[in-house]
Length: 453
Figure (cartoon, rainbow, N blue to C red):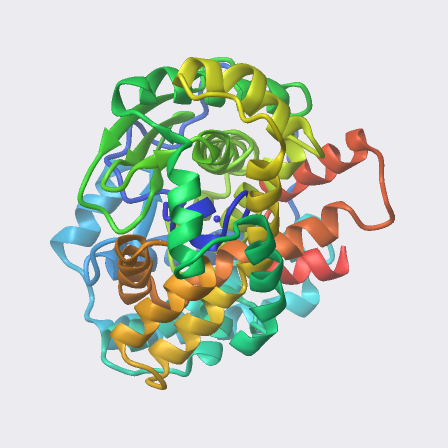
């Protein structure tokens, strides 16, 4: 969902709080589609015990979703399980106790698991259950510090820089956009010249997503009947959203509350589509739900380590798909003519967008200060304007996202950095980079796996 998954501008401008998906009515159960070949999946003596915990986790997650709108980002398992959860959900205290009991069972079972993939499955379930326990405690009113909340929900403790760390980046951007008045206003005015008019949005996004898909499909096989629907919406705190609906289908929504600039087309095409959220969810459904029968992957709780992998891989997928000058070339040669935007005479536009990437981490520091009560909302908006170089309206939208999703903001920039470090370790070739990316989005990957594998 929310997926949410930094790139051509800043964490907010690039992901705009783009989310991974959302709870959606399932298109079907978890029976294997006709195009998924039957494979021989290794079963061990411990597989039934893990399956039993998986079933309990699935029920727990569906019931937790009845206590918080948006907790379940996607579900495409049997509808009767969702119906049962809605008909008779346990209270939050009972669900917390259940999560703790299941973690104890996994801790007892884990040392006896020898199969590599089953070990990863057990670790994944354990991490997801800890996140469930944490979110249920938060539903009851318990509050954690920003860093503690992020670590408990998403599996990573963020290291944050003071805002002064980003002042040299602002100085570099000053040189690219000289003039009078606040730097944020100058940057906004300059970038406004690259706005896509509403009548051109669909052809531009259609072309952008097609290019994202073709580059991804060249390296990662996709189900033959995969599809998505693109819609433009308003009145959201995010800029883009993927609602994964099962059977390899997604609804992708793009928020038009604020003017959409050209740089967002390929960013959102990759982040929400390929090799981002749509591809990520398809591969989990194909490889883990259908081929292995691991039912726990038919539900996606938003506040869980799975979101760091989802958002991190979606953000990194932009530069993986369009490395070096490829993104600028595609925007200049393909998208600008479709959008009716004059091609600039120099590279300052792309140099500015690249320079603004260095500011992405500032949003996490602002979110930490705001959520920990060190600054008020007006100050958070003002600091967002200064350090994300956006208008007051865009800054307010960014802070509204933090109001709604809290420490979820770490998943974009930090997640991208972790995926990048994993995929690019040892300076591999392009084919190997895509192979590593395919493993991340097709296996029970945790943030800790990106450090150790």
